[in-house]
Image 1 (cartoon, rainbow, N blue to C red):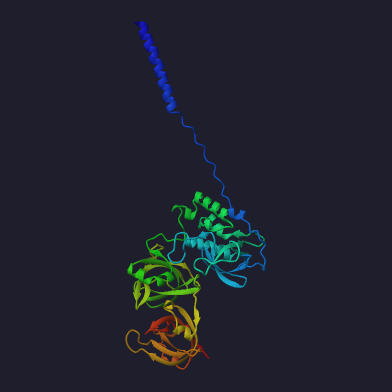
Image 2 (cartoon, rainbow, N blue to C red):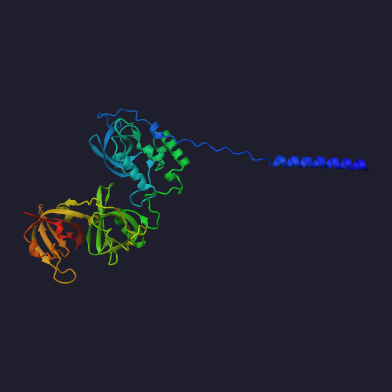
Length: 431
């Protein structure tokens, strides 16, 4: 009996050892995971070389498909206007599609636009190149598909701006649509995805030049072209502009559109409670407000300025910004399109033939001036109540039978375009 007990004890002991051994095998000590060594970023732009020694003899529009270019203006992140072989043309950059910086502004759009401008405006030299053979236009029919090379400084190697936009994460690479540098674009795009730069950050990286509020960030051009939808939808908008004139409760602003090479203008209604030094002529400001219709024209209202830089506020961007004044003829005034409303213009050497003064109501003292322009057109100038430096009201004899050059705002009255003069300082008398 004692021997049986000994045998059972030995068996139990062996069984326990097996169990412990089994447990040890199922739950081994974790092996430390080695820390991955960061992979150094590759500068694919530096590795991509301009293989042609470009001279004046090369033709962008001929079989060479390459030429020295001069920048006329930047439009946005992937579009610019150049002169090559004595021809001005709009270039659409091959292999990229940067976010929008005009119309409905998209995240990273303005940043991409500023990046492109910073490279081209300071370049020592620029070369434009096709994807092979003579230059081809895009689907719009008026933009040439182009690689853009820039030389940062004299003696430096040329860098392919299109590829750099992808490498910096400012555009998705469109490498399936190109031939010459498709492998470089694919590699740069993959690296930017892995590193999570900008457009590839999946929202983790914030664009310092983008508005993340509820209002729709846009431009004056977009507001004018889409005013009906914006008004009916009650859409709040945010846009940058330059103050041109201030008249009582109204502020006139403008913005230059590089794609159209055109100035667009709007009127802001500031009302009685909005008193701010930010809305002064020459100030570049960011406006937040609602799109409304007034006298069949679009305007912006419900603006705020509470003294701090909040998103829902007027923000001062820059002082002493250039105010663009467009010189026009009498014929151009009379035939001006509707999108020129409130455009700041200059009309030269108008011979005044008649003056009428309003005698009643809140406009008493304002004048309607009829004159003839050098191109033989009879035009109308409408003034607010003008005052001299001593505050005396300007009267009819001040203008009658005089020849004047005026700066004012285009407006429509009785279906006819006229110029509105808001200050006596905007009138120059011609001897």
